[in-house]
Image 1 (cartoon, rainbow, N blue to C red):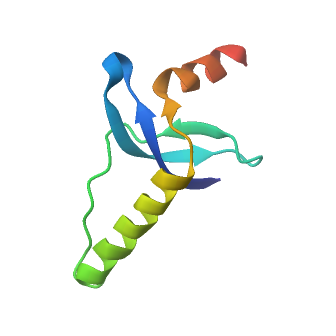
Image 2 (tube, rainbow, N blue to C red):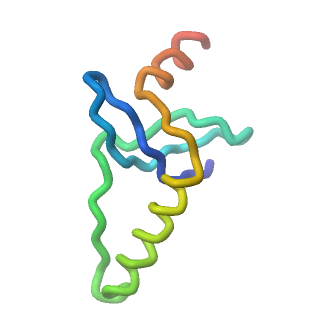
Image 3 (cartoon, rainbow, N blue to C red):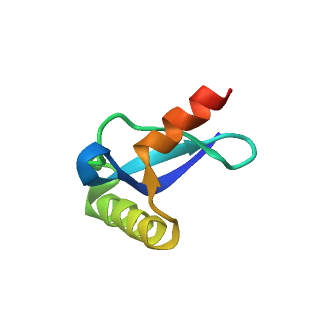
Length: 78
C-alpha cells in the first residue's frame, strides 16, 4: 500500500488535506479520518515539519482533488 497527500472535497464543499491510501494498482481506496496537522518529534525537529509540508504542497498541487463521496462509490461498486 502507498499513500500521498490529497485535497478532498467534503459534503457542503469544505476542502481539506488528507493522507490518501492507494491499493496495489495505485487507485485511491481510503483516507485519514481527520485532515492533516503537521507535527514532528524532537529527532525530526523543524526540518521534519518543513519536509512534510513541502511534500504535502507538491502532492496537493500535482494531484487532482477527490471527493469523499468517490470513496463510498468505490466501496458500493465492490
